[in-house]
Image (cartoon, rainbow, N blue to C red; front, side, top):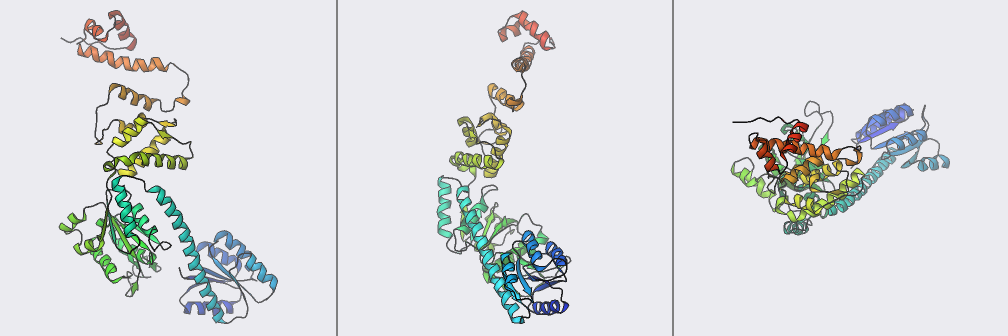
Length: 479
């Protein structure tokens, strides 16, 4: 990441002018400040890569400003300039976090050397930071891609085979199957580890903005383009770009992606210069691209360039043996995130979760587990803690529950937090709510014949009459 924006803060107008002219001639964007206070305001309002600060200025001195800078922008490289070549100043500047220290007067070639030195240091710092983050992500990723089913074992084998090369990969699967996780696994196991991984969802960006997101634009190329912007391909240079939902990409833009694959260069919107890029492309879609090709909605030549190595992720319903592992992983993850005691699922709950169809795949499973963890006060999650699934069968559609199952489901919904309930006659209240519809139903079936209804219910006729009065049941005799 080379230097672009530089701030020069010096109370001498001649020094500001000389440095500004020299730096702008080299192509740097340069802002000027007359004193420390103005410089601090500019640092808070703008993004600079390097600040050249005079040690003696009105208001905040260079050293005082350096302290403020380290509080506001710890990543900003600062070079202190001074006309007093004292060891005390030099030691103090470096102790407070300055990157370098220059004594006036100096030749402009010294500034060139310092800027180049800072540029290399920034690149190295960014690469180290990125590598640390990617190694951390890689470690997390290895614990995140869950599954021992034959289908997932095949995916792991494919990742191992294709990751070391730069071959283009097309990941296909339904929404929620974890396509981006697989793309990241390919990147983190490749020679491009330590370089950028840049994801872009082609379906989430309006058509008119997608091109500039991919290829960037030059300053003034359209209304609102106040400065040059690098596109995703340039940002991913040396690394991997992940084009998610590429099946939604407009057909005219597909031709430009094909050109990047063939020529390995891009042209910014509003520009005429071809910019070389070294980028590996991993694409993903939840659509049938072969069908899209037949319908002329997707370019055939681009499909074949992308589909060099296909990876097909099967839906969760086709690898149900992985559900218990996923449930265990999500329970641990969600409880840690919510800072609640660890929870586990009963055997009945696991059976229910494994049998469900999961049209939303892994993403739906995670959300379902999270909802149950939040709503249930108990350390053991049972089938009734998943009311959205209890009323559905393995195909995700309606399935008739037993009477006991319905009562269990309703009770859990009504008394989800038993610990907070006050003492009371819950037993009688629940029985009353069950008795009323039961007696009403039997009376309807016997057309109001209480003798027959009492016989079916297995209770005395006088007991039935008493219940009818107590429960306020209206008896309608039918002919």
